[in-house]
Length: 387
Image (cartoon, rainbow, N blue to C red; front, side, top):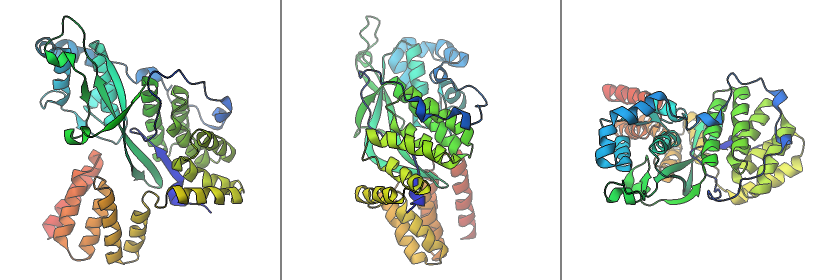
């Protein structure tokens, strides 16, 4: 009873797990039996967790020279905030194509929310500003890359109060949240504090997911392995590692890792969905059926279920049914670009070019990578030129 569309589920960086606060004691090291190093080719380059927050010479020069006057006049905290947000300074751009470390994000002037938070934290620490990390608690959202389904979450950064006689203005005495999403959304957030080790694990897990999506199982393994070691409480890394083992044919290891995740979070639908096909492949069919039934109770409508039915209807030529299914997904998750794109294509097949134009415009505006933006922009331009 394999649930193929639900199989390859991981969480990124975003991320959806609820974790302990910074003050919790360090967790025990993960069991050595969770890893199978000999099954995978060595990484092309060492995976160095210490490089995640490391500053480059360019970053230090930026603080020391480019915005030195601003930091002196406005104060370290407000001066940095202005540099992060004001157009004409860092000119940061959101780009979810790859999770970057601090130095890479600074060089590219782009990154997903985790990359931008990591870079901002590195700059803040260089200025001796107190830093805290928050996991934003919200309804789970999903993205996909082929048959890989990814739970998307969000993190932000808090610059703490400065109790120094050198503080400038009231801004220095207040906490300031750095968040790279619209302010009206940020103001309604519920958050939970997380430690730096969790942020590092998130970064490493994102890189594992991105490498896995690119088809490089060997490199993905080493990123996921490092994520588990960075914070053994971060269960998304176990799910990623389990999927890697499954795709690599290491079924016993996949079962062991996913079972470990379920021991710690028995109602984790991601781990349940991932372990069902593993159990099937191992011949544990009755156990697989039990887990599949548990998943149906916990999650009656899996991620992308209506979307996948819409694709099936579209390719079968039933465009009215496809329209209704894609519209239901847009209503449920209005910020996901691919739902708008396929709704637009369906409207075009139904002879409604104005509605198709509207949806392609929404797909372009909600795209999270430069590649997707350019793709939707080109399709929208072609549609407008032909209608």
